[in-house]
Structure formats: C-alpha cells, structure tokens
Amino acid sequence: MPHITAIYPGTFDPITHGHTDIVRRAARLFDRVVIAVAANPDKGPAFPLETRVALAEEAVKGIEGVEVRGFDVLLARFVHAQGANVILRGLRAVSDFEHEFQLAAMNRQLAPEVETLFLTPAEEYSFVSSSLVREIARLGGDVSKFVSPGVARILAEQNGLGH
Ligand code: ADP
Image (tube, rainbow, N blue to C red; front, side):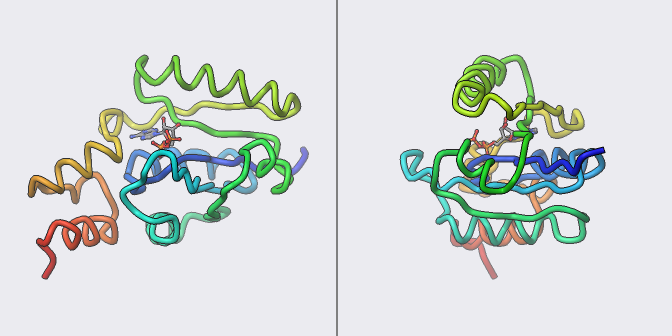
C-alpha cells in the first residue's frame, strides 16, 4: 500500500468539533492528515491565520498522524508541495454539496491526479459551523459543546466575557 497523505483544507475560523470529528475519522484512514488552514484574506476571517493555526493545533493534540499548516497559495500547489494525493472535505448537508462539487471539479482541472474525498460528521455536529459558533458566542451563548476549551476561551475573551 502506498503512503497516503490527505490534505484537509479550510478556513477553520475557528476550528469546531465538526472539523475535529472529520479529522479523527480521517486519521484512521490515512497515514498522514494535514489540516491546511487557508489565509483566505478575501473572506475577512474573524481570527488571524496564526491564531486559527494555534487553535487547530490545540484542538487536535493527541490525534496521531495529524499536522496543522497555514497556507497562502493555490490549494493544488500546496497539495503537491506536501506530496499528497487526497483533498479531504466535510459534507454536513445537501446544502454543502453544490459548492463542494464545484470546488472538487475545479481542483480536478488544476490537479487531475489528486482525488477529493468527502466524509460526514457524527449527527450531533452536522449543524455546527464556525460562523454559527461565533454568532452564538457573540450573543453570550454557551459554545463549549461545539468547540475545544481553547476556542471557547478565546471566543469568550473576544466578547468581553473572559475571566
Ligand atoms: P471553507 O471556508 O473552506 O468552507 P470551513 O472551515 O468552513 O472552510 O470548512 C472546511 C471544511 O470542513 C469544509 O469542507 C466544510 O464543509 C467542512 N465542515 C465545516 N464544518 C463542519 C462540520 N460541522 N462537520 C463536518 N464538516 C464540516
């Protein structure tokens, strides 16, 4: 069997239990999983790249074979640079499908030898998104069921609720 590296790209703004659920499943399937945190300045992320990387590192600490990297280049190029042949994405609901299908088709044009694979999270995370978690935290809601302690802490601090 060849050594297979899977790249899991995203904004991770911030990383949630939905993301880490996908990472845990992927870590059982692939030799190496790289969480690729996109700089994505066009999306105007709530957290700077270094913070998103640090929070992802904390969230996946202890899951064997998993690394976190920030990147600011074309994904197809990053995938090649990592010696990878799999792009991993998560599918929550049908609503994710159209966008994901378009991305997968475009990445196939750019890197024909790379396959995009999809995993689905446990049901309890199928409705979790980074933007919803940020919104709940901003309004003072408890997000500790959906994110790691480090993410919960920084969200609370950001909203002036830190201790
Ligand atoms: P992007 O800006 O690239 O969509 P995200 O961080 O929002 O970055 O998501 C990265 C990937 O993780 C996407 O494939 C997205 O569908 C998936 N994802 C996000 N939240 C969840 C979740 N709760 N469960 C499973 N997959 C998820």
